[in-house]
Length: 182
Image (cartoon, rainbow, N blue to C red; front, side, top):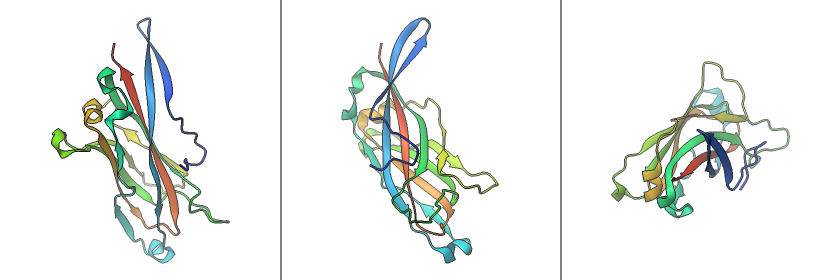
């Protein structure tokens, strides 16, 4: 796995929380989208051509990653998108300024779960198109995703933006938090 530049992705991190004088342990679960390469084209970029659709392959998270019955909560803490070196050529200076909007969704792996697809994270570019090697998303805070974990779920993305001038490779990292039951 190629992690976004300047980031170390832990396999599993433990966060201790103090609440009302007692300790509880929350486990962080990083999930990678894998690396995606957006094909660039200098002519289309200069013409202002747009890209739409899914950026990454759908990522499946199976319920067997945790003892689901022992959890009291499961939610997305953060999501960020970072450049990787996979399409970086000597003298190339890639950035993520071509992305105007990107939404991350969670949906059950099986349609038989009866759960709807939900938006869990969003990035929307402001008026300025500044260069960036990393985009930090707004996350739907504390949206309870335990029913999705019980069924198994998929992460998918939708993007809207400009065709980049040249190929750009990137990877998204979702940090989920698992809260054990009491």
